[in-house]
Amino acid sequence: MAPGFAAAPGASAAGVDEALTFERADVAALERRWPSGTLVTNPPYGERLKPEALGALYRSMARVFERLAGWRVVVLSGNPIWTREMR
Image (cartoon, rainbow, N blue to C red; front, side, top):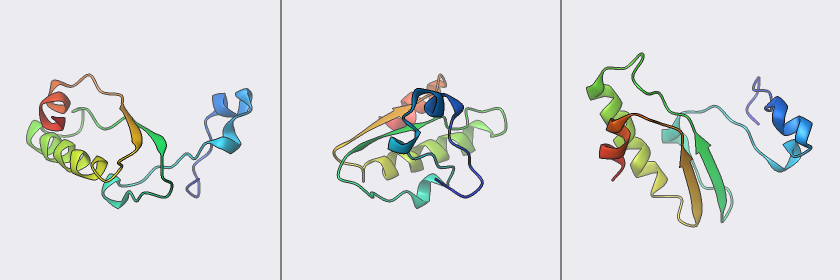
């Protein structure tokens, strides 16, 4: 877990917080630490970023996720730019 980042209260209440890793980090710095896993992310969706910047961010995320062969990646996004850029 990243310093200063508390585990989700729901994970603690369910007794699974020791089996999970919660981190807040730059997606470009993502490295594979285990052979398999599940990554769940809620990326920015346009409130603070212009569509051009958002598209560039999503393309960058797609390239990073390619390094996660054997992993499941769950992205919480309803932005149509995500779908177009993720391919």
